[in-house]
Image (cartoon, rainbow, N blue to C red; front, side, top):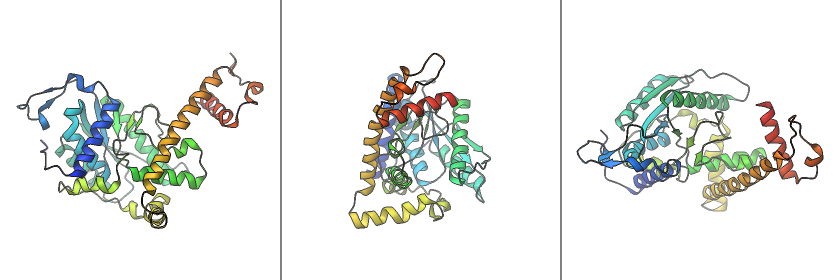
Length: 315
């Protein structure tokens, strides 16, 4: 059973973020929770057997491990059951040992079930990062279905959000891409499995705060060597571009990029909903699109209507 170490500000921030995110994702989860100090669970919280099961996507790295540890301690208070899914891509030497170590840490944090899933990464021509990501999210989806999990929790931080926005700007992406990642994504266009509910509790926290929460508990995370590989654009943004922007423009660049993402999310959601509503009057019973109605629309709405319609037609 996990014990409660002395709280530090970083630990408190991570746990609070977990509680807040799960309260938004499962607003009624705490209704059936009761407290019994003799039950042996952290805080004495007892949750119903049919409480939602949530799985941490655990790599063993600092962000996901900090999330797993916090969730293990907060799951009862949040009214959920907590487990972990660990994906072994088999792309690095010693990946099996890394996965097993992460599984042991998950069990020590009080998570159950803890499932290690080895995957084969298919080459699609989109690049190794995208291919590994697709395999990883497919595994999350499969394990969530097998265990009847209600959501998968991912340890993305504010720094990850800032990097995502900056990479989108460099590609000349539209508002939806620049909106970055959502805190809660019941239908997430940013993941290959759109029916899978994704929750990112740490999205409002800086990476160094998350790492500090582990250091304060004496927990050693795994350090992915790919995070120091400058052949990856995201690593160069993390190691070179963002520090340079902070040095030249002053502190707060990452926070500003994350705020931009949040604002664009609201804008993109509104425009997408408006386009979907408009589209209903433009499609005939034969599922053909009326170009006469489409032509006079504002380009922002017209492009979205086309994108939605093509998405429906092409599946």
